[in-house]
Length: 322
Image (cartoon, rainbow, N blue to C red; front, side):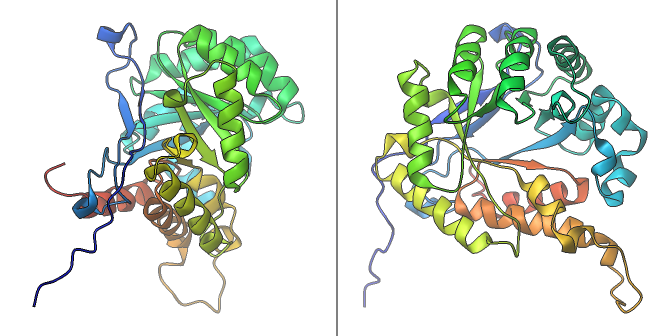
């Protein structure tokens, strides 16, 4: 009795996006990170090329670190007082990239100026040689002020800058085109809006091949099933030939996982589980693993143990030949 071939046949592949620039490319990075390239669903090598291994970007903030849980403060220690030192620690913990989140520029936080943000970017670039992603404060007016300055400060380094949304994409497109950076396109968990943001950026002159998509996500236990289904639908569409959904996907894992009450709650007397202090680690690792299966290529993470677990998982699932 013959066994039928049940492998799917895909007619397209996810775009390949390279982040970072070495000396040969006119930058100062010691390495680059390549995302995407898959021609099949995650880790299903029998259906086609699985592309590049998913990468991990470790999150670094420039302010407001007192809001981070104690479990994270313990592993980063005094390094959290300096973005440059924090970035060095993150590289020690296995970061393929640094994601610098400029929360200090938020008007309700430290309201850092464009010059201050640009200097922070320069300090981080000088401290580590891995590629850099730069994330604004989330307030359109302030991001329109600071992102041109930080983009210029990192010119030639081929950074990943975001986030571009329906209401602020023009500024992001302009600065990324001017300084040769890649772009993070943000959308709520809605395929049609994700496509619309990509259309807007493309119509403004930014190539789809240089975009990394960021569909907002949730953590384990907080709608992860819905997140998975929507992201998988997007990946299926991309592999089926929809060019507007054929971009690598970034997932903000650490932010989502560590704000879950299960990750942040203190140990309490009625719980005898000796691993209670590691629940946050497991929540982050579990969330990341689910999103990997949905097609995520770049995971933004926080805890070194979670990073270690996820990288081991990727190694186990990736074919030995790749």
